[in-house]
Amino acid sequence: MNQQEAKAPIFASGTVNAVSSATAYSNFSSVTTSNKELDITSQDYQATPIPYLSARYGRFFISGSYYSTTSFQYPTVVNTSTMTQTDYVRPFTVNNGIITPTGAPYQVQGVNTTTSNSIFNVSASRQEWDISLGYYVIPHLALTVGYKNADYNWTYQQQYITIFNSTNAFAPSGSSIASQSYNVAQNFSGPTLGLVGSLPLDYGFGLYGSYAHGFLVWDTSPVYSSSYLHNSSGADYDVAELGVTYSPNMEALSAHLPLESAAVFAGYRYQRFQWDWNDTVNNVQYKNLSNTNYGFISGVNFAF
Image 1 (tube, helix red, strand yellow):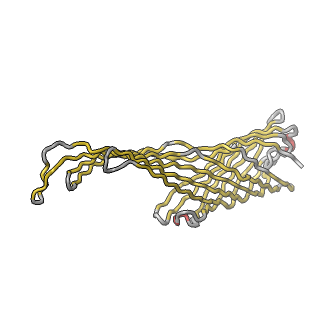
Image 2: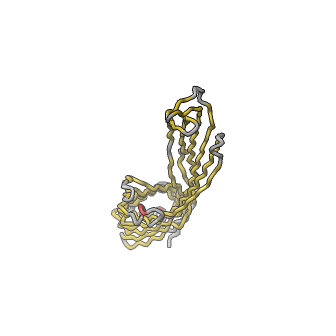
């Protein structure tokens, strides 16, 4: 199972007072606004097949894996913004250009409430592959050098719903709906360095583990805004896996393929891409952006 996460914040509020005049009245409006965005951690679980092949000659081996295309759908994030405006009026007279209030107290002319809902949906698809060349430094520990490629396609859909309620006859109630959607294609690719190892235990069980670091390039394709056009930068890649194996023949257990003769394995896998994005259009630089995938992994191995 694989898990992906995203996060959305915030809360803000404020009050603004404004005074204006009109032909027949002096007007006073008290405006209160609030903005609250749902603060959640979004995640989705999916089961994904990952075929793995390996071949060995002496101390050397070559291996590769393919993460088939998998789609993720994140929970909806709703941002709600509310503005309440109360309009007060009182009569006045104009004599030779001089405005004189009649002395009557202010009266409420109407209360206007504007509620804006921004509904945000995000979905993504992911496809990856890698290939590595390894060398056994000792029987159950190998060093690897390889190449990693990962493609992500994101779809963003946003809908804006505005509802205006008013008790002011001069500002009738109403509503409006608008929407937009856009796609972002990301690619991570580059060389990796790592190590893999295994440790035989009693009764046919064993432990295995692996870690690799990648020196990748992050690239994104053109989308709705020119600030994204062919943007690229260096990216760090880290992947680690730790688990348990069961094999009736522990003598055949190898580092690069933990289950060369084992029947089953189960473990936990963590993978993270991290990069910077320089928004040249808005002159903003975003540091340490990341995409994290993690979850349990299990499988069956066949040796030939």
